[in-house]
Length: 140
Image (cartoon, rainbow, N blue to C red; front, top):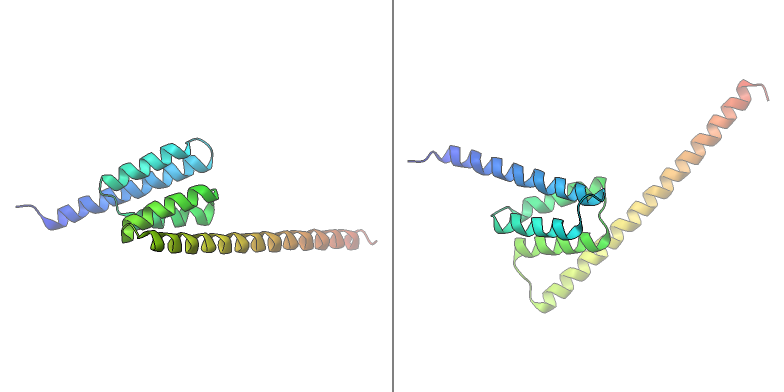
């Protein structure tokens, strides 16, 4: 008789390997070492091999917190994983879900732009402060 704990360990190990492999594929795509078609083919392979779409979606979200994907890649990979998670939607539902995903993506882009603008302001203020300190140190 098989040990259920041993099987769970094998499943946990498989999930960790698939998550790691998908993360590496996303990283390879992000730095230009892996074409998008290869990432998509690898994703399909993982899903047909029994990988959890929910876990792969989490990997995608973690990756994009550090290195956002181009919009087309983000939308397509998200769509594939969401469909595998909740099932293929009806045409009306797909349109609605896709539009919601696009709106969320736009909101995320706006937040990233706002953050970049704030970072630029902070850098400018730090440069002004350094300049002011330097002129005070020289007695100007």
